[in-house]
Length: 436
Ligand code: NAD
Image: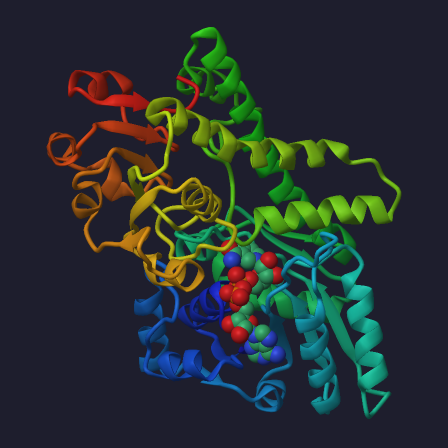
């Protein structure tokens, strides 16, 4: 089947490359010229494990193509996946202007039946707004179309794997014709056992926000348990294991630390709170989830200051800038707040990340008090403390004795609980972690 994907970012590229991998013929519409040039050479502008290989496979099999022309995208297929950004506005509601622009322009150009698929995360009832826009801009008012909600649940860092082996595929649809098209698209995944959950569009839209809010709530919950463990001498890892055995709870998303970030949780939670307010529903539970998360940076900074007394002119190594491992994405990463706080306190930072340094440099320009290095051991040379902000695998496997040798003062504040406290103590580190 021919599929048009609009927006070549984390979701659009992964979805497009995976659809091509499943045998569909895909055209990705991306408006940023620099990204487009890289993509046409089979190179991904983002770091996502396995994506480069899939892009090249798609190009070699002539199943994947790229354009900046929405008109071409509209002609190419009867089904258009909208994968553009929906960032937060100051009041917490999502900025839907990119979705609006795409829908308007497709409506202007279309001359046959189309299915508009919302893959971008959008608030409940957006499908109604999309319908309204299409009707307004259609030149031939007799043309038929459908709007489908098909939220995306992929996790950055494991996006290709998640797309090809999803826990579930959610399709919110109100017409048999569009339902048939969506079933055809996902048939290769369903045949391999992926559950296809068909529902109405409003429920599908809510499912996405509810899923992310629930996961964020789980992390905030365990972080409060971590504070309680610290106050009482218990160990949050053991508590997480102990409750995680319960199938109703599950062990995932129960890792205590410096909190959630990224391009989705912060904005989706804010959007869900906003939606609840708009419909006069008191969902202040989620506001507390957010507040708890904001306080995690204070928890980390307090540990560092307790260890070093003052941060002025102290050499601090920072390991991990991306919001999670295996991605170069730094949107709403805790590292942004931590580095800002460290600079404000007068610390001298040497930062290292396996993939996210270039993105981070665009926000915090290299200067006298902030240097970026290409090697994790270089970052800790002569440092008076090491802060671990992201649980990259290479940090877990680091040569701890070498780190101890390289540091001036062996203080480690581990914001992700990646090391064993006893091992660290035996090696002679002054080691602080979260909730244990
Ligand atoms: P992104 O910023 O990485 O990608 C969006 C892309 O759309 C950009 O490359 C941008 O240039 C392009 N674009 C914008 N307007 C365009 C237009 N008119 N024509 C062509 N291209 C256009 O964003 P993302 O992380 O891929 O997220 C996209 C949506 O998916 C958001 O709503 C997000 O909430 C949702 N989502 C993201 C993830 C994730 O992990 N990143 C997971 C699930 C859902």
